[in-house]
Length: 80
Image 1 (cartoon, rainbow, N blue to C red):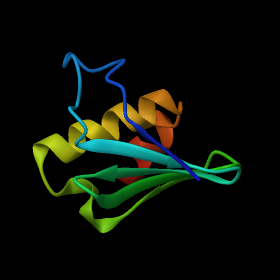
Image 2: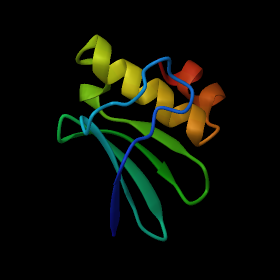
Image 3: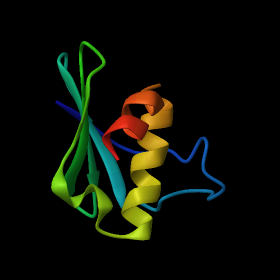
Image 4: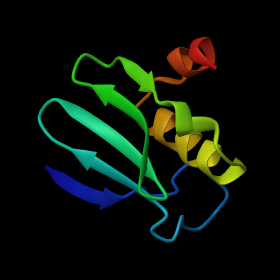
């Protein structure tokens, strides 16, 4: 499993300063916000949100960036 910092590509912030990370393997990409698992996209492109996804404004910001980068915005809107 590869762990990397979530880059702020679509967000107005310059960086998330290590508060959001993505763990990736051949099957899944998992978003961690403040070391808590908040969202996952599997190899089929299915988005799963975990209960903590809506914990804070910053965590929601991390999730929005993650879903944009993985092109699953339509699923996110349906799950909110």
